[in-house]
Length: 402
View 1 (tube, rainbow, N blue to C red):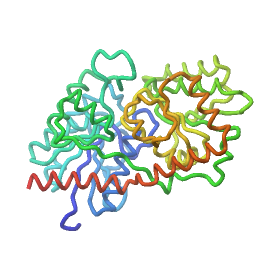
View 2 (tube, rainbow, N blue to C red):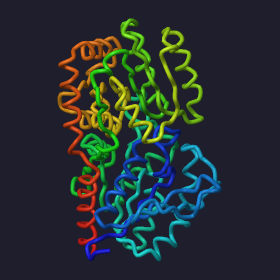
View 3 (cartoon, rainbow, N blue to C red):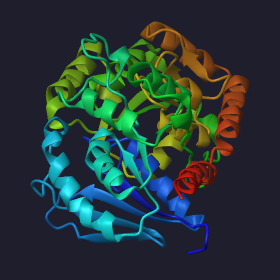
């Protein structure tokens, strides 16, 4: 390592950064943590990722790349644990993490999600290490009755846990201005202890296909997220049902449902049948990153139907693929993830979405312009730029502590 390089302990208690997004408890956070770590390593830093062992056969240490390791810690059963039961893993995970931090000569600790922060923050304080907190998703306030307010808390410990991590950390890293405002409003974090570092995109993996205009004809519409009400896949089905059947559009739902949402998944199947589109809907489960990139560049459009997103990484990946994105304007940080002239809707009315989509698909010049604008917007938002911004915040905190 060089004199300016850092050794970073990145904590992801409840989900491994190596888990494919779109699964039961995996999403954009997994991608962000992994890609940031790889990019930080390319800058000359070293990153150790700590996660809970959920598979008895998982090795103690995985050498992810030069400068990046993943360490599995034994906390609770070596099996998947529902997020609603993850609170019980916080204390045993902390005790397993302790010897690593004590003897690891780390420069700082960066916790991802509130589970990680509640577990790691007391150790960072004890060892006088700078502690940074990223939430990636902030719980809806107690008593909220709509999904627009954000992700419902999975347990009674979440909101006080987020408060503890937000107010006790040296710095909170938000992925969007929208998330930063939420953290300030709900937890009172002062501006000097808050920074925004937006995610990037791998523009080599996510790139346009050779014939983008071909995607307008008998188009494939893509939805990719965890299958749960917050992500709004029912709206995607409603939009498909309102398109002219002669267009031959089909919808691919890429993502899996956690056991808690098994009934919701079945309700989507029933809705597709009720709407008469079940023969044009393909539920493919979780895709790996290369499969997703292929699906992105083959899609006529991405339907980002979430009620709430802290950023909306899939929007950036779709645009890097030259794929136009339809999204809801009020969904938190989505507006920051979509090009200024993108198809951001002010309504969740499926008729409005269908009309917007058909107007785009019917106009060759407009579609070509949307493809160009999408790619240009995404092209400069690289993981290297994200890592440089993050490293700058790390270095500042370490130097202040010295």
